[in-house]
Length: 213
Image (cartoon, rainbow, N blue to C red; front, side):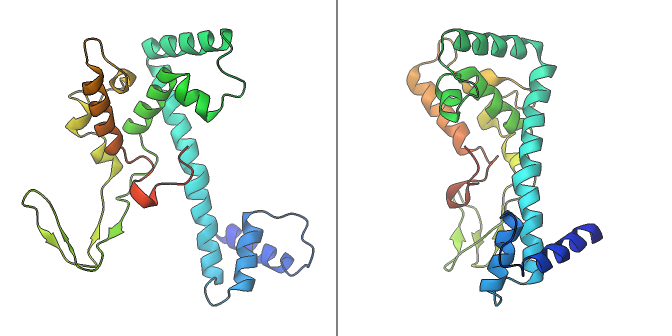
């Protein structure tokens, strides 16, 4: 912590230079402090940098490790994924590096593997707090009334093990995200939509993580 504060103090002094050598996130935070001192204090700048590391770096690393861990731990999935990638590359349906659009549309099994790994091991295990707005909130199905100002939230680790994902929620099974044999298209689309609505890996609603895709 002391090292980070020392570095921040050093950069704050450099920020007084009218022509900084480069512009990174910290430089922009310090510029905001200079332009809006009534809002952006030294503590706020430090909070911004810590949030940037936690939300922009740690979560990405956790997600990638989860995807690799579950894939390598499950030879059946590894073989099936390798076959899909090899075939798609041979048929020139993907580029290197693979774009997000290609991974989503041309590689359905990869998409399922990613969704399943992040279901079992979402990077954020907090309750993703929200505040009940003015007027309060009446929970459905006979639930209690929550007064305005009440802090509510749902932990992705708990939500992702709801029966809506099936009866084997503790197992890594990417196929749950795909069209099953003997399943009608209508049933599949409804089932998949329910799972997507219950996926909190990147939050939900207007506060969904902007780095999701």
